[in-house]
Length: 374
Image (cartoon, rainbow, N blue to C red; front, side, top):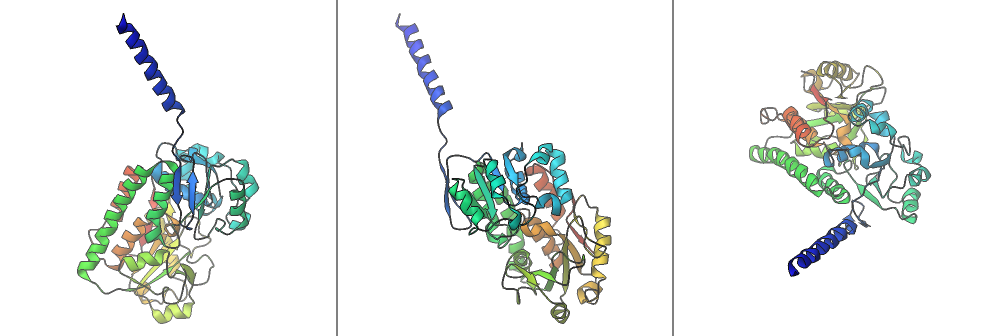
């Protein structure tokens, strides 16, 4: 009979299709990174080497099931500089404790030999320098010689423009384009609300001092300049006093300049492990009460205490890691509330954080990430 023969032929055809689908190779992925390179991957990366450990924050947005499984190795600055944040990741994904470390917390400590032993199929570095080797380093040349692709991202130098570019790049590289686009559309809607409100109201821009990594025995004042969180100060309707004298993303201001400018708003950045009672204590695992108490110590320092912003209660603290993080939308919303409290009385960064945790993050961001003196 022809009918069974037809069934048999159909079954063989279906089997051949399944076999072909199972053995089909992934399509190559061509990337254009933040250093102007064109990089081609044979398929989605599965063993990523992070040139900064804190780049895990981006992976937590793109892969909710097991982001740690994607990491072949990383730099050690995440655990050293943000121990509470590291602990939250390790509590949710214990395998983080077993990720090999390829350097301490500086580009000079990066071990390319150790990194190559881990057989990464992609290396992610910072286009803005910082804790990872730069694009012209011998480390990057060695990776290329070994046939390991290297891409550069940036959340640090020009975060307003480069955060979307960097997350899209990683989404492409990891085969998680949909996750990247969903987060970026949500992020942009929040930023558009701030921009639209300011464009309609046209308020005067208050002068702002942001003291980066304030206190802790460090001299006043590290500050954002043309870039970094200075972009968010300007975006949120402020006048960053560092922008006039610092040509790059970050740099120093002397106290005499700060006192002469007498900014209307003062913002300190800090972390969870301050060196003494003059540094902000803020970030993962920190309570609002502890953060506010530490801020009082920060603004009691000589010179800072005399600023009009401090005397009139317009003093605030912000989590330092926003300066190099895809979560920087939260900094933009906190700044908008502080700089124009009447315009943004109904803007709630805490609600934005809660939604980000619920919708996007593999590890919820839990703690205090902004606080005010009053």
